[in-house]
Amino acid sequence: MGPTGVRFVPGIIQVESYTRLLQLIVITLAIALWLPNAQQMLSAYAPALEEPPRPGWFGSSWAGSGIVLRRRLLLVVRSFYVAAPSPFLYFNF
Image (tube, rainbow, N blue to C red; front, side, top):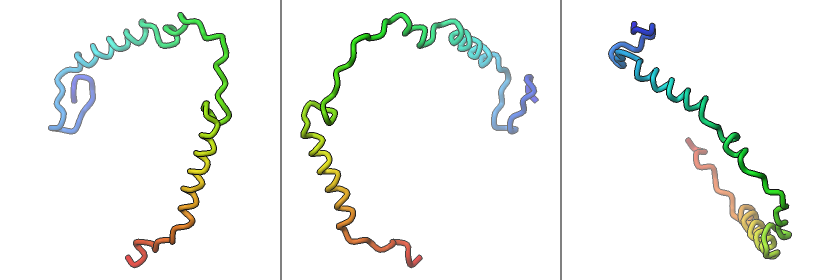
């Protein structure tokens, strides 16, 4: 048994002292408790009060992009149904 009462697998991990690890835990705990978190840092900034601009019909300035993307999607889906089904590879195993 070690000085802390923890016993590791014999011969694998040999630890003489945990003082360095405990020092690191105390330092990180002090940083977490006394430094400001993200909400405290962002509270110094005022929120934007104007409305964001509304996007176009299909999410972009060019209305035809939605039509083009829809046609491409339909071509991809159609290619799944046009192709001949392949036999199950592991049927004979």
